[in-house]
Length: 119
Image (cartoon, rainbow, N blue to C red; front, side, top):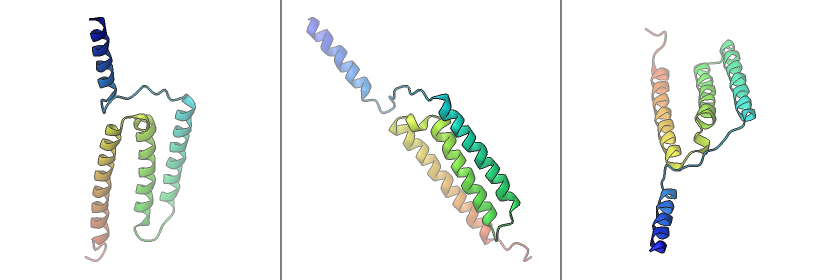
């Protein structure tokens, strides 16, 4: 009788580890947070610097969006702990990022196709 109880407890524990959303706690050191925060500040300064330079055509918007995407990736990976999450969470974030990219492409296509100053 005791063997059956141990087997059920083992099966319940094994089933628990197979859950797609199960992930162990991951403690990130303050050094990592400081490095990422510093990197975000550098990219913010880079954004301000890029806005002061008059790039040809629509390149200013492209550069600003590229820097914003890099900063967004750092925030999602480290501050939202997606880097240490389950595959299901990573898939969900990846789908959201893909949707974001499609919307940005559609916006840039519309922006580039307009007849600015020709009316």
